[in-house]
Length: 150
Image (cartoon, rainbow, N blue to C red):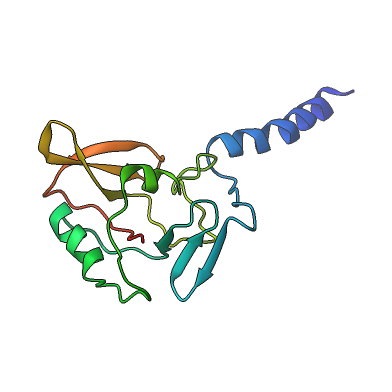
């Protein structure tokens, strides 16, 4: 094989693998994972109903009220901030920026509040960064986006 053919072969082999590693190739959830109706996403694996969209960002206290008061006008009742474990359940670890199934959810690679406060520090709560899927704690006044659940 000529050197140029060998380099082309290697490039054709490596480029898709590198793109997947950088989050440039989007993975999709299995077709039966989510069911979407009128802005509400049912996760068929967990039974949770999620807000398909999200708000523009606010502090933790206002985020909780946003869900409890159903400010987004979602169908159904009992909307609330998700726990950190619930929020992590919709992270798609195979992709980055955003690390969520974009065929199902409207997403911005930003922090999203959970209802889970940090143990031993009532001034902090856990959030998920949907740029990487990682978690972090923030002061309650910091603005993060909100995706409600029920």
